[in-house]
Length: 178
Image (cartoon, rainbow, N blue to C red; front, top):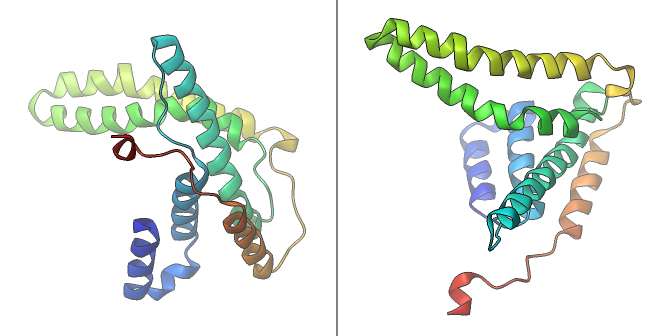
């Protein structure tokens, strides 16, 4: 896949990335979503499309959390049980926060008052929500139970099991139907 090729290219250029947690989480999560995330949500009516999108977001959150959990457990010695709930609660705010912040920064140079207003009235409340949800869920005692240390061999076993569990989507592509 293009993701595997990209990871390999990165590793050939910078071999130390193999030990970088950000690299590991990024590529494991993207590959997990590509393998287990499902297709693009479809539906004939607005209600069907809305339901399909919400189910797809839920599935993507479960897959991303499940695929990244072994790496998080290995590196930090705990499993973030609240990650699925927190991702569902904050997932729809991350995009607007990033885009809103970039747009406000661009506008700030030309219309300083408008740029500041966008940050204060649009971006700040969403950011406060995001931080509040993380602080609230992170404060729960059972949010991330500690695990005993385990060797990297277990990671190989877990991810090899995921590869063995993967099945290519049997549904035909739109181009195959024509």
